[in-house]
Image (cartoon, rainbow, N blue to C red; front, top):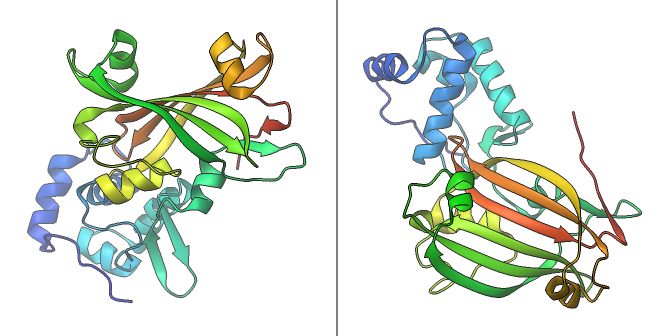
Length: 257
């Protein structure tokens, strides 16, 4: 498979880039990590692309092959990159499997993992509230898109979601472009935005009247609330999602290591 070359590839540029973009107080492998991560952000290597070999990167960045390998290992652990035996290191894509195993933690009581289907209830563009401004680190007066959707396991309504996005990053979403089921893959394919990590907070709540009707449950029935902020590769928030889950037949699973 042909590998994309980095841009630009002359060593003088890389020395200037290395000095300008990284801190001398950081370990060398972290400085290499920063350079590679910035290239992912800049679209030098796109999802599915093969990176240059460790030897090529080491020569280009004037570091040891072991330093490059450590930086790549950390990014593989974050699922930003993946390796194919005998073929090299590649940029991860937000496939259905990746969405299911890395960003969706609701599973059946028997451990079964299924990515639920979804139905958009509403979509609106408006000025961000103070809370949305804080969560997404927006400037005052910024506009957002808010999606409300239902998610179904085996045609049974199970999750009500409220998803807020900065309008500046998603022009046309919900009006000209209809969002599909796998939103992270959609962000990556349609808008060139890769979600690198997400931070979640959980709490138990009681179902209010409207969501009780949507989920076909009793008012006041316990629900699991998942408050999640997804972040881009450079750490900036890109999505704030609140999910209210009827976990009568499902549970939340978080895997470590």
